[in-house]
Amino acid sequence: MRGRAHSLRERTRGLVRVVRPLNSDVRSRMIFLVLSKGGYAQIEELVSQPGTVIWVSDGVLSNSDLAAIRGRGAQITNFSRRIEPRGAAIAEALETIAEHHPRQPVWVEHVPDF
Image 1 (cartoon, helix red, strand yellow):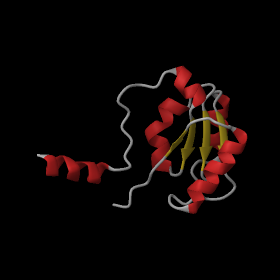
Image 2 (cartoon, one colour; image 1 turned 90 degrees about the horizontal axis):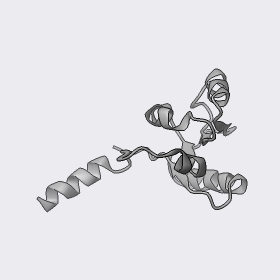
Image 3 (cartoon, helix red, strand yellow; image 1 turned 135 degrees about the horizontal axis):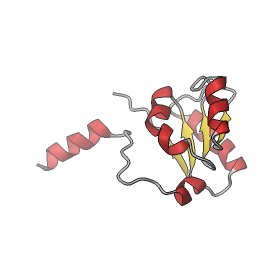
């Protein structure tokens, strides 16, 4: 059984599963870094609420999508460059976010290799 659970963990590594809904207090403190259209689609309902802070890689959302999200009261920042889903690019993006939101937790979309 243990081997089976381990292999399941490996196959699902990086996938996000929300066990319980995040309340508005958590959303107001959590910063979201979204790297892909699929990643945004998975959390769209959660993050499109007033006061939510979202940073997205360039090209993830159209200008009209960005305007609509802002119109619902979310604070969304579109990076001027594409953020690669691995390595130094993530660290650099997190440094930029920390400059604007010091000491705030950041949810980072992880794109699995498989």
